[in-house]
Image 1 (cartoon, helix red, strand yellow):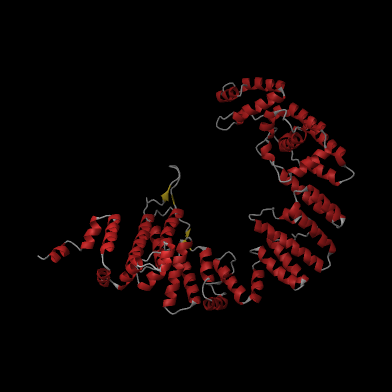
Image 2 (cartoon, rainbow, N blue to C red):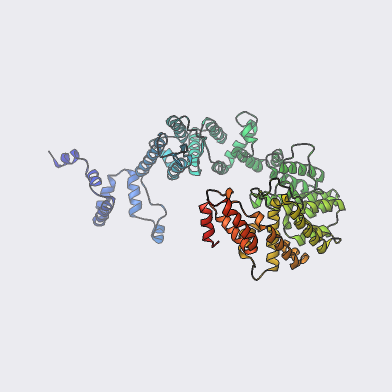
Length: 611
């Protein structure tokens, strides 16, 4: 047998080297071989290789001048065979993930605790597929062009994944679905687009194909922003083709629901195309969607103001306000003269953009009122805009109410709206603090009195302190008020202590345990305390502390209401009571010794505080 036959019988030299050496050893071997090969011999060697392999090796051995200057190339040359191998390996990883996901006890079945039902972890599944897709995406065009195997299209792979997972996991383990991330969505879109082009079809055929695939998927949904970005980057002729097709078919069952839904990615694709190719229709489309997204009214109003069409601008403003405030009943409405806008919509802004949009709406409303010659409304909207920006700055608000010329009913309505808003935002309900059976709701309290005394020249500091004194006396007569007055008292005590006891808190345990000042910080704190200092004296702080001294024992938490035998809070309150009123502390301690003698954890907690 010849040497060649012996070599072939046990595999090629290359195969045997791959089997016997590590990658590092093979790298060292190649470095040595290429170092000693002459150019003539190297040319003979390369001539025996496939053309693409020759080209790749030559690019590696003879780098361009740019590569020499930068020392490191951004992308090393890779042969088609190597790319095809990588492609095949990535699909193998994909298949292993799907196989594991279809296992009834696979790694995507999660159970937080032994007593809880297991669930399917769609998040981890999508993350794992996304990692594979991120490596596939740079190879898509090459794989499609050269017919790498497997020649799977992503749509079929996703349908198969849905089927495998649905059939593999238990029927009771419901999967609501999972949204793909950007790389996997991009892979799906790029492969479909290459297929459409290869078949000689156009951009609208592509949009139809994607929409039809979406309808076929039962678990999979595509990533919204990836779809919008992909269609945005198509060529201008293709986008015009898509625009024409969507416009012609927008009332068909396939498209109507999704193009009318502003939260749909197809709506965003279409509205972008409308804006680009038919701008005069863009604003009409936006106006029809105001009930779904009130901010869409702003561009329409801006356009009408530019045209000085104030009557139509007012109509759109009313449509926008109805969407913002969600007034669905015809008998409900809002006007700038009756209440501050931000008090009507819950003052809930998830982003700064939401707040800026509402400010813009108020500004447009004011411009419209001015254009219509509605002076009273224009000035009311001036107060609205000031309040939106400076609602927590009392001095700015008092100045606005005093100087902006509006009728007395409008001023009173907006002032009351602001005052009640500040009171609501400042106050905290203490639902768990129920001391004496029924609770008497406190509608008007010292913050209302303070604001009223500032706003009215007929009231002032004397009237305010008289109201506080009467209120404290009423608490002694009607103990049902104590539960709801607890927060109000804490806030008043905190403010007065910080105003009049700036150097050292005379009752530190009481202040930290009962008042808990860190829980009471509010946005208007500086303004509130500034005016409270002007309208009170230290005598009021002393009067409030006399009340606490006499009544604190009524607020101490009851041991029988402790959670899981944790009496730390009870012991802390007793320490505060002892600090403020030793006699009341002794009486309550004696009562506890009789009623709670067997609560060992209570007495342990008391002992730890030296009680």
